[in-house]
Length: 60
Image (cartoon, rainbow, N blue to C red; front, side, top):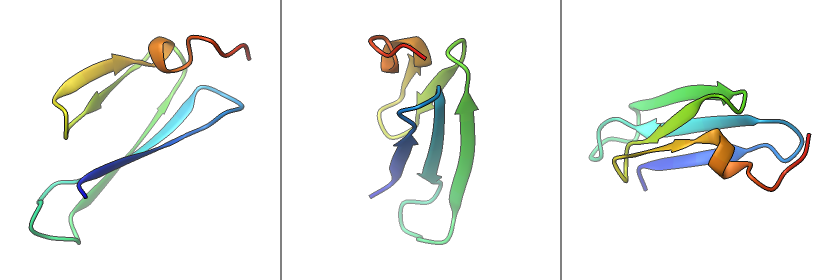
């Protein structure tokens, strides 16, 4: 288990938690992403995803 996201359903807001050292449980990095104009980099998959894709069928 190396990364997880908390995705808001009411606003374009995502909290990202990423374990920097896979062999250690105490090196977690926390980032907040808000606003649909941003992108989020998923470290575990090595891919960048625009928040517009995550929220594409949601009207705020």
